[in-house]
Image (cartoon, rainbow, N blue to C red; front, top):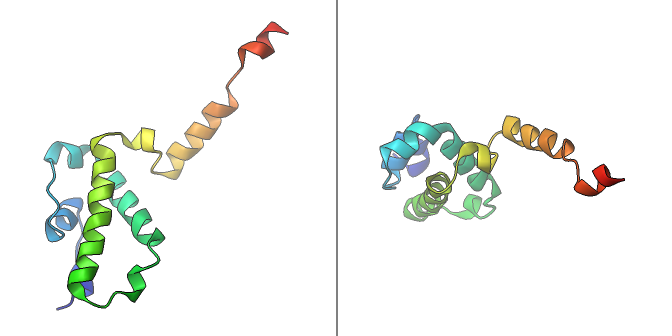
Length: 107
């Protein structure tokens, strides 16, 4: 089987982390699994060089870098702070619309 075939069979965050050999803490994954996978997907989609890689080991290494980066994002932050999902992005936009500057209150 090829890397792509094996990769397509993965389902859970733990599956991806174990398959790619990324060391992780269960507590981080338990709280952020969907955020990690979404960020991983975002990083993969932004990597324009992936399509040109034909060697399975090189492809796995490139995927590992993106997954490690996505996982680390949520070791040091939260899903809400990172605005991983559209609902978080929309909430941040609504909150910025509610900002009232001190100067506008003084006038």
